[in-house]
Image (cartoon, rainbow, N blue to C red):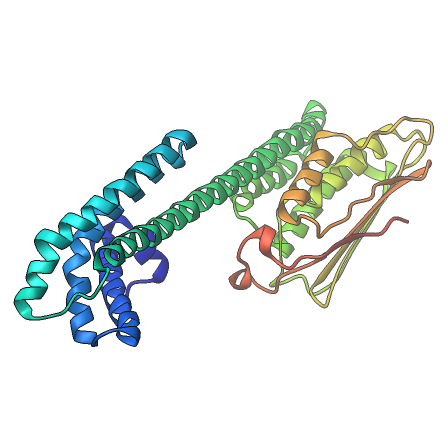
Length: 365
């Protein structure tokens, strides 16, 4: 069974496509003329005799004048060619009628009628106009399809680039943490390396997908917290809370992790007194809520234009255009980000990120 799009656009169906058009055109003209003149059989023969003339006149107009002149922006040359081609159509109609159509019709005893030359000319021109219109419409649809495909490929490439930018930035900070432990020959170093290995595996393999399991994303966030907690020890208070059913839920990878990284980078590392950090993740009615708050030095200048945060903003624009809000608030002595996203139930129902019915809302505390 040939699909409609394949039949219209695939080159391998070109001959079948053209044969189908001319058969439908012949049948349509025969039915129309039968309403006002003669019988269906006579009109079918009359129009059938003119199919060669129709093709001779229509194809140069469609595939030379329109494709090579009109679509290339050569409008004056196209207009001149079109006027000249009307004259060609008249002489083609007269001579085809005189030397082919009329002799055959007289031979089989089918009448032609008065003013038949003008009728044949109008029929030839109308046929060429309809054929060229369909051809022009098809070419326009193909250009639109190519444009949309190019836009989609561009978006995909940019998303991959944004992910690639997140990875080195994240790994650089994590490796620094492990390096500080290795300098003191800490026995915890192998365990930290194992957690880093898990992070690497996640970023190299899992993050290639458009969406990942939410439970995996949460696990990676917990591993990152464990790495940082080993670095700070008892110098930091960390609150970690996960509620609701996070299994069989999917989310775009590395959407929440950069905010967690930013909380440590601009919170704990710059805090003079004992810092604190809170992470609350909950899922209810297929809605993910993630709130990250952290203490900070109120006298230290803070910017939300880091690599990781900017990448998340751009990815949200790509993945959920017009369906998300992101507000990052600096309250002086603490910093807060809260994200709410409507999740898909399973990966089988997921199509493409920018087409999924996702709603995002940010709540600032």
